[in-house]
View 1 (cartoon, one colour):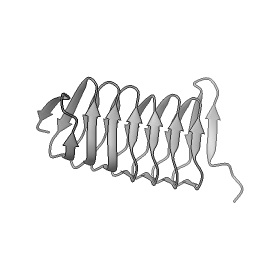
View 2 (cartoon, helix red, strand yellow):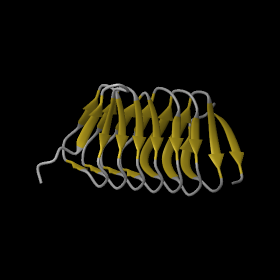
View 3 (tube, rainbow, N blue to C red):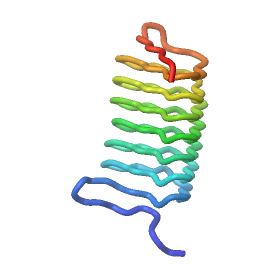
Length: 143
């Protein structure tokens, strides 16, 4: 199969990957990136724009973006660092740290090693975070 797993939408400067895509090298995107569900990344993802990871995405490396949405049941072995807002959906596992330059929203069932938000961190339902940066404003609410 020689089809390219990444398509480009020029009007919105957005790259889109097919679902169940597989990448062995670092991904560096100057624009937005929408990742199809069930994709696998063996190295880092660096996006100068908005990153939207589909459900069940697996990343062995680190994730860097201007803003990010991490889809449900995704797993990241490294760190997640965004300059703006970070949204983490249900049952996401981040082994390293999750750092947001603005707001961070975390949905139920998620597990994070270390978390820090410059503005507000909102935790919804049962969330497991081993350590939160002191001074971070945290809002906890039930589902």
